[in-house]
Length: 273
Image (cartoon, rainbow, N blue to C red; front, side):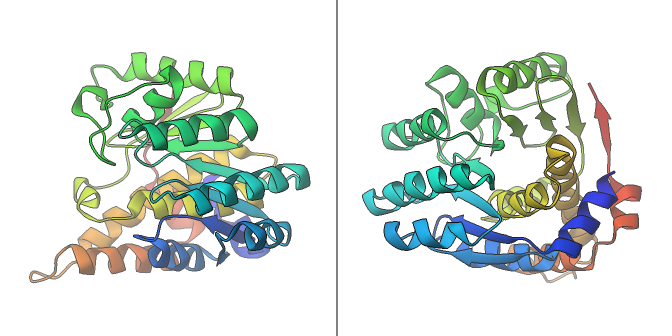
């Protein structure tokens, strides 16, 4: 199933509209291209409303907010929902400031997202309405580990049921649930946390996977998470002695580009809870 989800992305090549943060916008575009889909970026409200109508998916990332982009997120999101497009919310830094938290919570209230993807602190903030996010990074108190895995899987299932969205909590152990099944995924490298944008790239890729696999949203989300983590593993194995995080970013994108369905199926590390 995981490999088939990737094959569908490359066969359909969905057009993904990204209202994302300017720190990582280029990396998001390149990652979407690498997986076989097409990116477009538009965050002027009137333009975003029109652009999202010609796309197959909308990826909303709140990493660098201002009043103009917030308006664009709501207008494009409501239009995408009307048209039945794939909708992803990446609540970057929710819990770090009131603006980010309020924006993410209000987006959830007014727009039905297929998937909400964030780190443990961000997801906890959206579920409880308050949080302890350390900048855009996960608080260590919220991190998923083997000791709290069962509890956190239950939490993700609960949030999925209450929100009506697939919840993708990503970190050292990724948890993806539709309220029934929960994938616990162990692909990736800790060094991925030293690169700005791996989560943003994942959200863009995930939007493409959801658009290309609308009948299997949970599996599509899990496939995209496995793919990103596996690309991190492959990219790290190809680093030369003198290379660092800048080269690693490029190696990850190259690994996404060269990923095959067979490699994904063989390299995915997950269990279903």
